[in-house]
Length: 334
Ligand SMILES: [Fe+2]
Image (cartoon, rainbow, N blue to C red):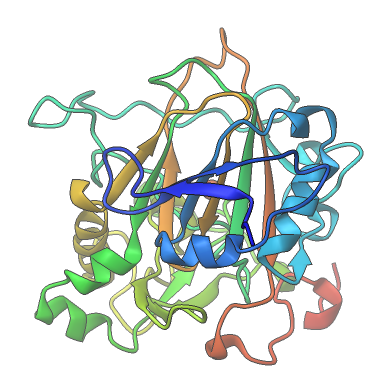
C-alpha cells in the first residue's frame, strides 16, 4: 500500500528535516503517515507544490488535522484580529499586507558572520522563538504556507534543532538546565529584554496574559527524546526571568545562562535556512525546534504567509491543565 508520497532527507545544507513530495492533490485524498514522517525527520518537513491551498485555504486546515487533535481558532488566542484570515479563522496571517502588521525583523549587524557566511547564530541572529510559548499548554506543531513569499535571500525562515543541541550540550550546562524552568512572555506585555534594558516599568498583566513557566528541557511525547525549549529577547520575561529561581533581569545570572544556551542552540550545525517558494508548506514541531525570520523590504515587497497551529499533545508535564490564555478559566475580569 502506498503512502502517497516520496521522501528525501535531510534538508539541503542541514543534518535534519525532510522534503516530502505528494503524488496527488490533497483535495482528492489526504496522505497518511505524515506525523511519523515528521517525527523521523526531527520535526521539520517541507511539502512543496501545494499551490491549490491558495484558492482553497480550508485545505491547509484539513492538512493540519493530520498532525493533531485540535487546530487552533485564532479568534480565541492572544493575537490581533487584524491578522486572522477573514473566512478561515484557523489561519493566522504573517504578512505586511494588512494595517497594523508588525514590521519584519531587523537585519543582523554586522551583516555577515565572522567567516563571511550568512549569519545564523545568536546573538548576531536574533528573534529565535518557538511559537506561542507564552501559553500553557503551548501549541505542538505549526504549518506555514507560502501564499506570496518575497524573493529569495530575504524573508527566510531559519530553524534550529533543539534535540541535537541538547544532546551536544556540555555536561556542565546539561546539569544546570536539569529541572530548570524558563519564564516566557507574550510580546506586547512590555516584558522584553529591550524594555528591561531601557529601564521601563512594565504594565500590569491581565490574568490571561501572564508570563508562563515552561521546562527548559522538554521530553517529546512522540519520540521520547529530550530537547531544549526556550526563546530569547521578545518572548522571555526579562523582569521576573528569564529563568525561575535565577537572578532576574538583563544583566543577571539568568541572562548569562540564556545567552550561553541560545548561542549553543543556534550553532550552524544545528540550523536549516529555508528559502521560500510559492506553494511551499513547512511543517515544524515547536516542541523540539526554534525558528526565526529574516528581514525583507516591507516598503517595496509584499509577503503573505498563512500559519495554522495544532495543539493537544504537549506531553505529561502539562496533563490536565486548563488553557492559560482563556480569561474565564483563569477567573479574569477582562
Ligand atoms: Fe514563529
